Image (cartoon, helix red, strand yellow):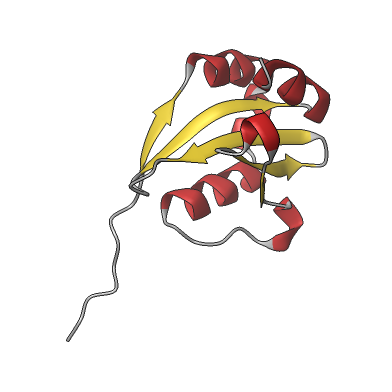
Length: 101
């Protein structure tokens, strides 16, 4: 009998995310945030409402999803698929103004 259970991903939180989290801390206790993080940690596809997608160009190593209408999470999954890297959580314009540097 094979075991399809996978170990949850570890989370690496970058200083850029910490700065953003202070600004948007109330969103971090929302049901949407809990669902997004739970899915990403447990390797479950995000529901379509979060508009999860890979980025292109200079940011092609990253993905983004919309936690709320104009609250975007910029994240990366490590090459070995075992670490969830949290980089930014902010409005769409702020994330991409800062992330493309």
